[in-house]
Amino acid sequence: MPSLVNPEVELAVRGFILDQEKMAEVVERMTKEMKMGLAKDTHPRAVIKCFVSYVQDLPTGKERGRYLALDLGGSNFRVLLVNLRGESDVTINSKSYDFPKSLMTGSGIALFDFLAECLAEFCMDHGVAEEGLPLGFTFSFPCQQQGLSKGTLVAWTKGFNCDGVVGKNVVALLQEAIERRGDIKINTVALINDTVGTLMSCAYSRPNCRIGLIVGTGSNACYVEKTVNAECFEGYQTSPKPFMVINCEWGAFGDNGVLEFVRTSYDKVVDKVTPNPGKQTFEKCISGMYMGELVRLVLIEMITKGVMFRGDSSQKIFQRWSFKSAYISDVESDPPGEYRACNKVLNDLGIIGSQEPDKEALKLICEAVSSRSAKLCACGLVTIINKMNINEVVIGIDGSVYRYHPKYHDMLQFHMRKLLKPGVKFELVASEDGSGRGAALVAATAVSSKNYKLSV
Ligand code: GLC
Image 1 (cartoon, helix red, strand yellow):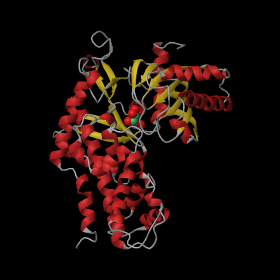
Image 2 (tube, helix red, strand yellow; image 1 turned 60 degrees about the vertical axis):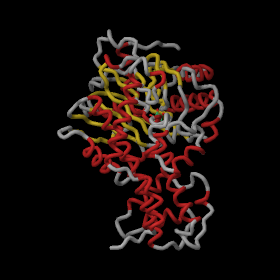
Image 3 (cartoon, helix red, strand yellow; image 1 turned 135 degrees about the vertical axis):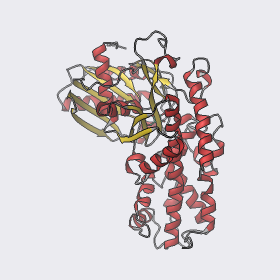
Image 4 (cartoon, protein in one colour; image 1 turned 45 degrees about the vertical axis):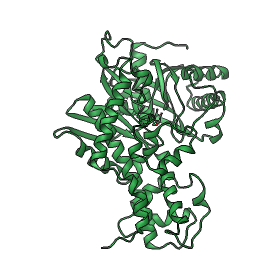
């Protein structure tokens, strides 16, 4: 059957196609960059930082107690009360708070005051304001940790850009905000990245879980490394514990130019309009914050050239960020030849009366962007698995793109199989509530080993 799609559209998306050879090249370059991040002498100039998380124990299933967790870093902010009662017996009460957009780029003090205010309200509602419960702080930005409960923010990502936080210990900023209020008693015992939470949460029920992956607003992964290879950890040669979870911060891969061969002109435009141009190159090719905008840029080019939606104009589509990444999942969820979800998306965008070839073209553009994302993620996971040199692994995954895109899981699996050495077995598992449960599990280990300071 001849393609319904205009050849101009096919030409426009060609740059997003990654063949096997290019994927193998991505793995090779990424392997080099990760090694630089881990090694002490090259770490300062490495782009994939491979930060030490100070998490050295995976859950045993024996963790008990009540813990609070804060989850900041995606599209919403949550407070959670997690009750670990034993083997798979976990109850979670949580509340999502509307996060005023202005806070993302305001002052750091205002941000932390808001977190403390939500936390206080939540604790009062649940009658735990006075209990001094241990808190795990899931703060999903690159942090150089100095211990389990201490870490300085290296840079903001994902559209955040608050003053006075980069270079500061974020646990101290949170604790100070709590103390400024003076109405709740809380001990922040652990600072964790969302990837680490996801790994921990998945490992709770799947002991073979060794990698945590997020494909949501941002993208990143962590994995279990041998302590002796975690050279940036001061005790890497003497620690009695054999493993260390490494927060790769793979989003920054390519910030030194090594990914130019997979980037398109659209990627360059997206990069320019973000608050952190030149940074998070890999993440900007993969994650939900940027995928929709990439699709929109191709679309408006096609509209301007008169190739798509002839005669239909929509002001909304010309507004930056108006094409949500969730639309990609919608458009791709229609069965072949059907356009129910696609029509709804077009309607939302104010484009009416479009023809079948336009809808097929839109689908093609969405597929081009989402399959490149899944291929790059597959490259990242294969890099990690090769580095770990293991034959069997479970990967815990969270994030809106992975959860809601109808084909993401299958694409990831397919491309990983093609890239991995034969015989390597892996399983991709959606991790339940990683940021909450995972933070509580890390907090539980911190409390039991008493390797935290009560005040910062
Ligand atoms: C960004 C953050 C990283 C986080 C990821 C997923 O890449 O820098 O810390 O894990 O987003 O939320």
